[in-house]
Amino acid sequence: MKRILFSQLILLLFVVVSCKKDYPMDDDGLLITNRSDCYVSSFQLLGSDFQSVTTKAPAVDTTAQTVNVEVLFGTDLKNLYPQFTLVADAVLDPKIIGKVDFSDLSKPKEWTVVSGNRKVRKTYKVILTVKP
Image (tube, rainbow, N blue to C red; front, side):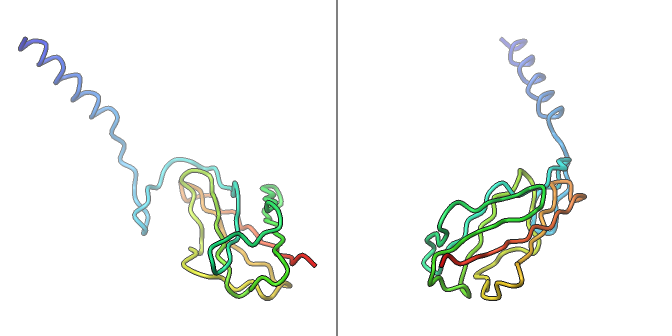
């Protein structure tokens, strides 16, 4: 019995030690990993009531690094909440901490996606149009 318990303890210790990876953390307490993927997988735009204001699914182009989104006529463009879904371990710069003003349609908003290893950066333009 002692021999089995000792064997299990040694095996558990081996698993814990061999699986441990010491990844550094960024300023936000997020792990910096070895992943270099860097893209937006989906996007959503919410109004001040936190309901979608898009007329159809936004078109994310990872080659051109653009997001084309059409919103409903009458949408309050000064109070919108963009929501990005990114590849695993990537982060967004600048961070979105509240509502965003999209009222100047001639100037697309830009956000940079930073890879998990924090070495690859890709800037995406969010191009907004209003459905007539």
